Length: 382
Image 1 (cartoon, helix red, strand yellow):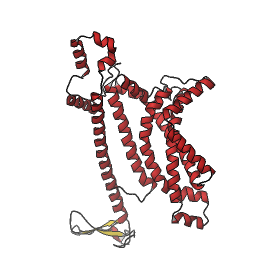
Image 2 (tube, rainbow, N blue to C red):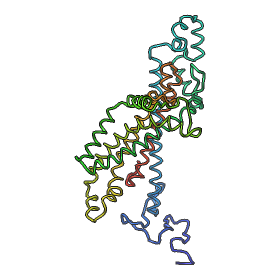
Image 3 (cartoon, one colour):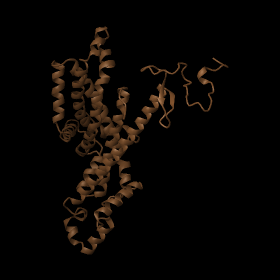
Image 4 (cartoon, rainbow, N blue to C red):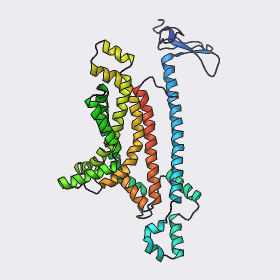
């Protein structure tokens, strides 16, 4: 101490290129693994500069994370551009005429060639394909998703009106899948080749094999004939009528959740069986630690990484399965709107909804990748 300040806080001459960390009284140390200040050469000069090891590692981790996020963002944008090109081209090369879907065969036959050309021009379908694609991308960049060919409604209003129902179904199905799949996988792994394990594996295979839309139709028919129950077929949001909203979303959520839960149960079982054979688990058991504590605190966190990865991939299953399941249950969500738009050849609605699903899938998978470091601090992003 000198003048009431530690030695590392004394003002040094401006010509001195050596800095000392004020957070530690320990002098410069190059011993690996110590918390003392470590020597590091500044990238802009050849002078040896002393930095705090903990602060440097934090800066480096932050820089790595930013670099990783930038890389993932560029990869996600390229993926979305590829999806938009594919869906745009596929919708244009499919057989059929939008005017036939709009007016029917008889109405289309009554239209004069000049009227057909005028309607196609009004819809923007008479322009070359590159011009149509560029206009679509420009509208998205400007925050406009266009209007439906058939109803004239804005696609953005359709998403805001029906999107909350589909979001509730997806979120509730993920919760159900974890609440069902993870406990089943744990019980199955702790009692391998016994009755609970055999029952769990049989049910997992059963729910993996049953198509979601078929199971949904069975549930609808059973509720109709046994309980004379019919779910409301209009859009009811959670903040309007929670009970009616729950009746709308619970059926599709259960069907999708059971399908995902079967995957999670099998993955968690196989991962936990591998982890409980590790040395650190045997050491914890040898020290007399309780079995529940060993599984929950030691084995399960390391076994969850592949399960979390699988959950991100299963979001594609949720997004794709919701289309058929919503149609089976008659839920007026985005999935059913997509089916109706495909039948009507409403290309504006179809291409925007498919692109929205792709955006959701990419964002969720990036979030899943970022959760790895929270589950396992040893993971770093480069």
